[in-house]
Amino acid sequence: MESFLRELAVQLNKENPLWDSVTLVFPNRRAALYFRKHLSEIITQPLFAPNLITIEDFISEMATVRVPDKLELVHRLHASYQQIINAAGTRSEPFDQFYFWGDMLLRDFDELDKYLVNAEQLFKDLRNQKELDSSFDYLTEEQRKFLQEFWSSFDETLNENKKKFIEVWVKLFELYKTFRVQLETEGLAYVGMLHRAVAG
Image 1 (cartoon, rainbow, N blue to C red):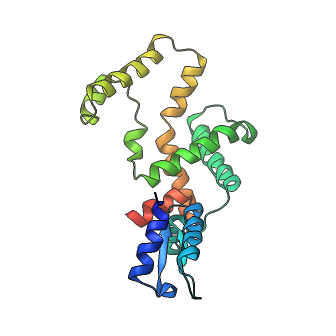
Image 2: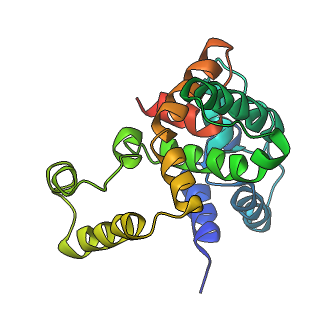
Image 3: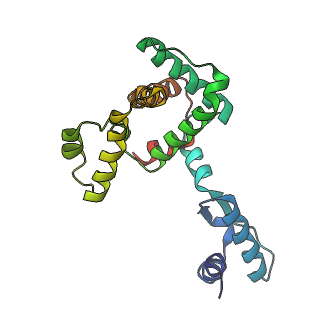
């Protein structure tokens, strides 16, 4: 059985043998490399290769902003976090303690923007049953029950870790917005922001 990329190379070679005028967008670099390998196996004469790019490269070409490296993004996220925490009068967290979960939070923000998730709805505090019923009427009964059990476990025994989780959770949407605004004003973005901008 032939792989999809090999079938694609064969089909495209039949339809359009002028490869130098073709640009193909792949989900990642590995797929582009395998496609190039399959193409080299089926082509019999010398020719210019097609332009093979990833979806990330494609979106970056359309953007007018710069995507900094992960360390800089987490550092900037920490600055936004400090701003929100200090405004709320909560004890701030040093960067070395923030880095691990800041990195996870950055990945979460990236994913929710890539999939065009409504961040405000995602970060709602769903301890209130009425809010769960009115805002999430599209959920199945099983999903609602899971959310109710999750949030009710916080009300039953509110230890220090659970209090901290709730304190952070209720500020996540504000952090998300503040972080994005600060990046935009400096001509920066993370990859998910670019996806949302291109899609919108």
